[in-house]
Length: 82
Image (cartoon, rainbow, N blue to C red; front, side, top):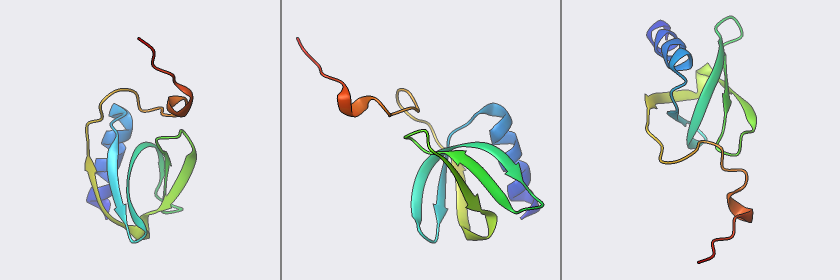
């Protein structure tokens, strides 16, 4: 678990999006803050909602690349015209 915390801290510094797999599913998130004492990772999801993930529920974490902006709040209202 200590190695995971070191990796997460490095990805937080680099503002690197990560793919987190938990027992509830898998999601691409932007890690913000790691609280080792509370054993929680605070992240933003693609809709820019702040969430916390208990470290005990994390199965795997790996860095990922995303295409375009991380923030997807306005995509539903975008209208493409020619």
